Length: 187
Length: 187
Image (cartoon, rainbow over all chains, first blue to last red; front, side):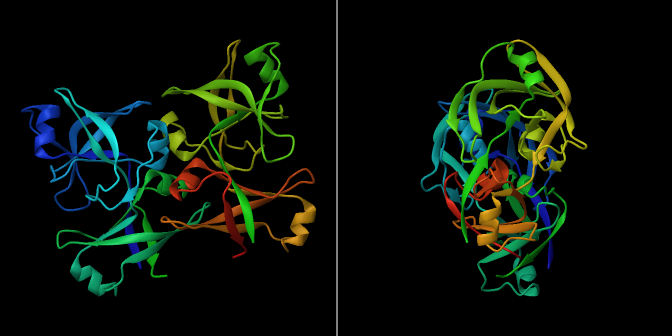
């Protein structure tokens, strides 16, 4: 079966409390709606800082969430001198400490992870695609650097729509691009 | 069959002529021998520059070669604003123009590529492993982000020893590390 691919560059999610520390009373604006309903690329950027390095212009995604989280690729993590664990979004067990800097302030907390490969899906799509009771799928990216990605976690929510998320290491390694259709299958 | 994995960060090869432009009469020193016999990480670093960005501290590998070449990952290429083709080392058809800067001077030429995934092997090893007449293999990286890399080109030379080379996008995406053993197989 074919699904839409989205490649996630490093980005930040913030709680309302942390947003206020970083941006004060500035309203959070929408630059672009993302494929997942209600999610958007915001008009705000932050810097992320470790003892080794600061990376600027890291996009804040919206809306605000119940947790603050910095998602980076392993390549980014080497640049930052961190060794973050691979986690499902919102699971910050063992997350690396990082400082997030905005125009009005900064927060430092253990919130830096590598996001797992995951497939967004709603219950109807999951039933239609025969993926009920299945936790992980594989995806094949065609091209001159053909690659099979395994360990893709299925994330079901009524608000989701069918979309495969890979980070920039995986996506760029396979010469893949956001918006292309890729084949997924059960191993 | 198991082979040793080497993950190649962005790096530069230079001709003797270009080396002299960049470093003058400074001798080329060895910092570390690489796995492939005679190849080494040199004591020289350069900057690589495009209209969009300059990346510093890019390692020059030795010895000097018959061609000047800058090998980057696709992630690096986005940072540089380039769209280099995937090529076998030394094949610079369609290579992107880039400026290489050393302490004594700089050269600008179409020499920036994405290196293909490749397996170094010598004729004896190729025969022993049953890979004579086979052009490409696949590799499986185990772990929490299990991945199968296809399109791995076999590069045979009497001076080579068995080693799989992936770039940082592929290697970091699979959470792989230089020096680990990985399974290769014919599709």
